[in-house]
Image (tube, rainbow, N blue to C red):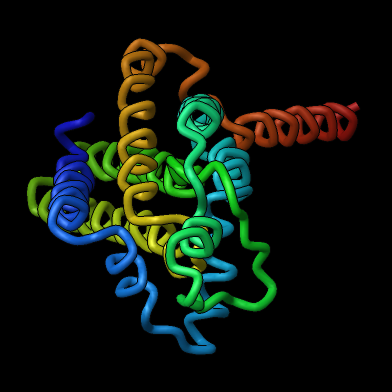
Length: 249
């Protein structure tokens, strides 16, 4: 399964390497101001709403996955909860200041470009919980999409397999870009520093990959493939059978 998801994981590693190099080479304040330097009304509106991907969206997606396979739903839900708990534990352990508090104490003359309608937090900055949730969500979705594409490719003829492989690559790339955009939204909104995004990415990926150890055994159970469509179809069949029996009677 992880080999089918190499595109997402490779892009994530490159993302971490790029951020790590930036953290080593450039000062914290200058890096944040540069990443936060371009603001438009359109971007303000987009990132103000898109940042919700790291809030309630994973739970909504987990509910929707019940219509596909309950196993993927449970995996996403467990990964989101566990990674969230790890994130909160690290926040209270490290107790770092958010950008607004950090700049007010060290660079009082700097005015951060804030977005109207967004409540700016001041403490418990590292790691970024939204980044944790984003990378957890889109890693699981990338895995599910890669698994679906592999099954379709195996069932199709040899001439169709390249098509499904290309679709898998595109979906994995899209999932990574959405995860990265969710992470960047936290810098754009001045809720987090780049180092918080770096740590949040590691926590999200690490917890999700560690919990993956339980996935292969579960895939061999009936629970993994169960979905709500089975329940609705079963009820429909029972209703049709009852109606048929009543008609015959």
